[in-house]
Amino acid sequence: MIEKKEYLFLLFFLIFLPLFIKKIIYYFKLFKDKQTASNFNFRFGIKSIINFTLKITVIVLLIIALAGPLKPDKKMKKFGKGTDIVFVVDISKSMLTEDIKPNRLESAKAFINEMVTGLSFDRVGLVLFADKAIFYCPLTTDYDAISSFVNDINCDLMPSGGSSLKSGIEKGIFAIKRDEKNKSGNLIILSDGEDLENEDYSDCLKKAEKNKFNIYTIGVGTKEGGKIPEHYRDFFISKKRYKKYRGQYIISKLNEKFLKDIAQRSSGKYFSLNNMSAKKMNRILLNNSEKKLNKRDFFLMKNIYHKYLFIAFILYLIAALLIIL
Image (cartoon, rainbow, N blue to C red; front, side, top):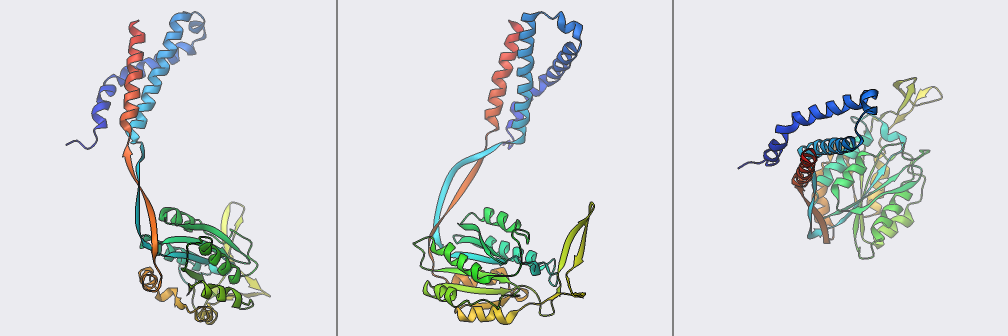
């Protein structure tokens, strides 16, 4: 059994490939010489140009066939029970603190990606917040797309003059409620809890409770904290310094008290990212969430090299006939 059947077809072309290349070099030299080109027989020249173009096209098609072009074979739909999960991610500058490696934001992103890998029919969405919130990715079961969005998250996506978790929760609730069929959902907040105490969360937490939305808070960082880095460019060199206030380094610390309060007021739970695994979080969602029927689309891919080889073969025959005629 031959796995790469395209190579058998290519053998036919590759036998004549040196002749192709020799002819191509000949035509290049022919038209490079101005005197030869001026004395060139027009009728014969047109035929030669067409022949030359066909041969170049054949070689290009052979290269494409070797590359193994793929296309979706068919679309399959599978149905299964799942829930809706919206990750509400803090992207304020304090999330760049390196008290957990490589930093708080990158650790949160790795956690989300690991969670998504363990899902099957759950729909996932993304909301980002700093001084305001943005709806970054709608609910979807396309986990590859979600991972791509997660990998692109950074603290420069919006100006950061503080943190407004309230707007993040409101956007998360809206992300789930926009589907009128939704009767439940989960908000997973990943934040260091800094600068979040000054807002009144009563309204949005009541709204979450009314709609039976579970809110889980995950603290990202350590109680000891760390300095907040700032990255800048000095000519062409990327450098790093740390934020200061009145000559003193600013130390960003994990505010667990506030995040615990949010979780308790919304009948949810608080976890520390340092002591939490993605698998454990998925189990908690599985046990505590109301499941509904969701679908996932699957694509099968097939190699369509033979189409390019067939076109190359036809063009090769035409080129051969032009020489004979």
